[in-house]
Length: 309
Length: 173
Image 1 (cartoon, helix red, strand yellow):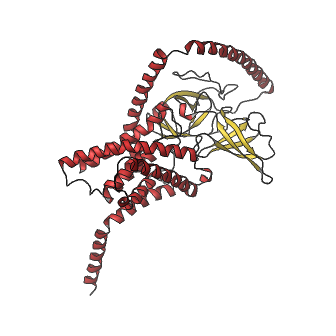
Image 2 (cartoon, one colour):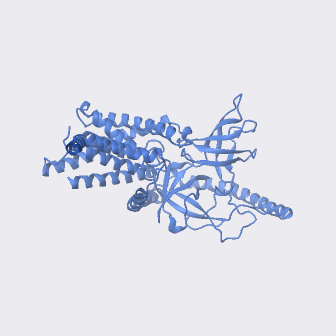
């Protein structure tokens, strides 16, 4: 008695599946990525596919960037030179000012080292080295906050490594292949950087909001004397950015009548739309820890060669 | 038909490369065109459910790749956009000129809004993700203009196929 009914029900299911084949398929297409997203799941086949696609597209992106960048450089460097004389005079003046500041900084550095020696102070910062990397692309989606750089695991770059530019903090390495890495910018809503106010030395966290022009200041105590225009630098610490790198300037400070923390925006020090080259900070366990193991936020890191701070 | 699918996948990859390189070369901050979204719109207006849905998923996956955002967000949004536009496809009498621009601008704005909402509700600590309205508007305008280019390329591909195998192309609209 049961066999024909079972056959009927199996047949009915099959016919239903055949009839609603398209809606079922589309529902699965919707459910799959949604579950992966909601559960923050990273399936292995996806990771393999990611690597394959990056290996295919990144060299093309690099070639395009280099070719067009080269043409623009040729135009601006050899053909379009009408402002060069004026710029040269301005740069010479700037160089003089920078030299004075550099001499002063060198004196302070020496004084600092002397005083540290007197106090028998051992710096806890890990020794690091800087690896220059060319930016070859940005994240494909307009809403993404990432860059692709032409350095990968073969060059010693690791996931989570800090990425900086001459102006300050850029982000951290989020995804990596043998020759390329994707950098998550500090403006990404997934990013949080421990910060220190250069003037007041108060601690806080700079969190991305998805807006490339500003981030949000969190956990800054309401009693702190933070003001608009204050410079924020990285607070350092294990697993984070080296201490003292520029993050940005505080803006729109709001002190509410209640609550522990104040609200403020942070204007990033780096213009992320104008990055051609960045430096990847690589921890260097082999190097001896110097008296000032951290890296200075200077603009002097020469591009094109590995620089040891 | 397999050749057309392969070709459309290649177009998706090419468009994603353009989308990733152009903002860097043009120093564009906000006005970034979502060309992959335009591909999804074209698929929704021209392809069948199964093939168009699968290709939309692929386009969304390419957006996800390297976005440094939780995996699946843009894949899901791409398929959702495909479904919504496919259901409303009969409302679009034509896919040329200003209508393409209007459709792409509207889709881009809704896409931005949904991305920020989904992120806010489903990602831990995502409460600070704000919709940057000015950026979304500029991006929508760029997407609208980019839509003209993407639709023209895809239409040309389909016309080429239609000349060779008239019956094998999707049912159109």
